[in-house]
View 1 (cartoon, rainbow, N blue to C red):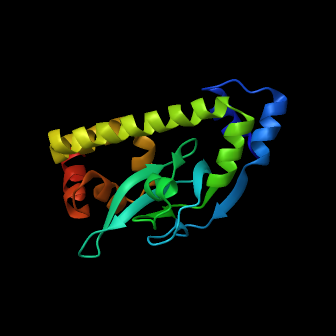
View 2: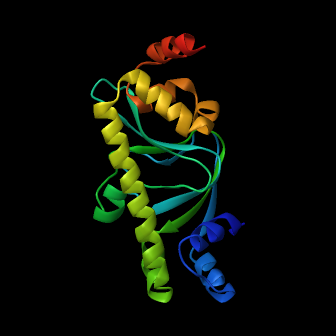
Length: 190
């Protein structure tokens, strides 16, 4: 049940079998059907989600009501709205299952208690956050410095699983162009 997250944690920090049990005592498994929201705009984000199975996305609605994908997460990735999680302000974005998903959730209060009991988890969560921040910076770099075609090529080469599993209109949204433009790029490539 918690095998994947324990393996993920152990890539960054050491855990004894006893500490693994302590960690698991703070975690909850949640299952979400396709298109079910883990978090909706305006709600309070009370947890961080580790994807056990499935694909999850974070998105926002622009002023025209068009969805803009901010982030995807697949097996072994974390996703949360750090803004609301850390500030106790209402969420500005949505988190939704793209396909049926199972996540391991840790609440804010549980995380604080866990960090007191297992101090090495502070390092784990810091390293995970640093990796997520670095990925966010790289995405910003690509959005400003790559052409649409270069963004798609880079995304396809580095994240082929997303291209196969995620509906193309969501990939297009994430890359900052329309589904029609993505269809044109794919036709050119093929």
